[in-house]
Image 1: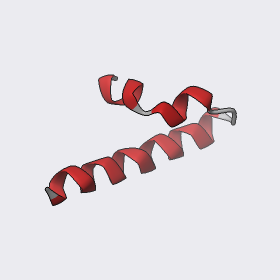
Image 2: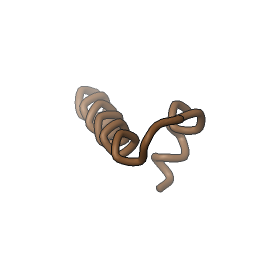
Image 3: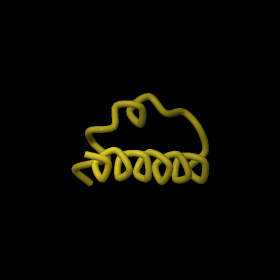
Length: 38
């Protein structure tokens, strides 16, 4: 939950919950790839 709060794109999200879930998963994958690349 702490990570979700830091994703500012989700604060202004206006779409169906199903699509929001896919977006959250995609952001999570990108964030993990960035952290593992360091």
